Image 1 (cartoon, one colour):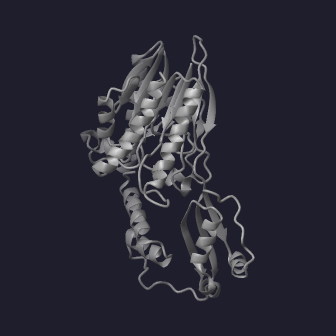
Image 2: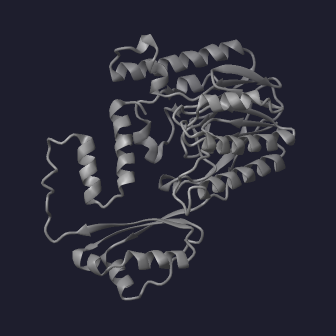
Amino acid sequence: MKIAHVADSHWGFGYPGPNPESRFEDITQTMDWVADQIIGEGCDLVLFAGDAFKDARVFIDRATAEIQAFVAWLRKLSAAGLEVIVISGTPSHDAISAYLLIAEMQIPGVEVFTEPATTNYGDIAICCLPGMNRSSFATNSRYTGLPPHEFHTKMTADITAECAYMREEVEGQSAILLSHLTYDLADTGFEDALLQNEPILTDEAAQMFNLVCLGHIHRPQRAGTNVFYSGAPERHNFGDEHTTPGFWIHEIPPAPKLIVASTFIPTPARQFKTIDWCDMDIAAWLDGQVDDFADIQDAIIRVRYSCSEELQKQFDRRSLEKALYDAGAFFVAEIRAEVERSERIRDAEVTEGLNPLTALGVWGTNQEIKEAEIVELQALTTELLEGSI
């Protein structure tokens, strides 16, 4: 039996690109490629481990387009005779209402779960534990007034208890855990700061199952002995620049015990590329010595450069942007300077008395970061400070 393990498609609009729809089209094309591969490989079952969508709260026209894209993907697999089990992901990405709507469509062979539950495929139990975050527990009176450390410890203990309960329900069967959580032995990479204070799947809980198929972390990996993250099939931002997007196929031969052979399938995802320049590079550009850019065809590009104030005055960003597009860039997301000032001037507004959000705003302005990006950084900072991510 072959099981495809996919997650974190994050259909949505407004990603960096030539227009708000361009990256949505990228995701749709990549996911369509994934479906073709799954069908071509002769898979029997597809496990979708959450985060089909980018944002949970969106206008109805956008929600309709995103749901239609996910449903079309599910219908393609269904039409090929595959069984598909879907769980919802992180509440800030996946609106439960969207998943309930998809469930009501009753697509043949597709099961949708937004709460912990167990289903079966043949003689294998699939224990479904959908995504959650700190706010998922905060409304429970048992968590009221707990300090952050105790809150986190209790969340983790409750998840372990839920896993134990589901495993007891299917005692005697081989069991797969399908979930959307942070596993405590996972390589989280750059996402580490954003995953603080989240509910945790412990290795103790993972070892209750023969195989654990997870979504949430975009770095595909085998973690521990039996835990797999599929990663995201498409890159979404520069944090994914050095990640290989894809999905897993787990092959289970007929046997009394579930023995898994897993193969990772990379996808033809959009490339992100960062170009870092120093004084020497800027000087070379001004002298006309840089006229070729390697490996940027159809890629999303950002340029970060540091130089003296003198070179900065001579540098024309628009000419560099044009050269990047002429060389085949799909989109130039950013050309940002870190100018080395001859005299370091401390902004009079920046003092130790400022709160973190105000200080971040001042810093962003000094770094010539766009206002919309500063607002987004402040929103993320607020969530981190409140421990709600």
